[in-house]
Image (cartoon, rainbow, N blue to C red):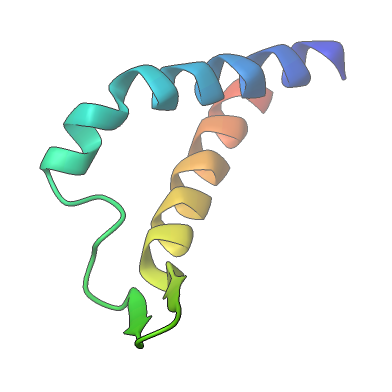
Length: 66
């Protein structure tokens, strides 16, 4: 269990380090992400980005668990 937590922590750090580059290629603003902008508020619902992140994490954890 501790090994998995360490790996998840390292993945989070890696995403934080590479976030400027991920933003340049459009991660976080993929087709399917919903943004509602009104006068007094903005709602951002990253559906597609969440699905992509979930698939990537599933593959990484599957490879680690192998």
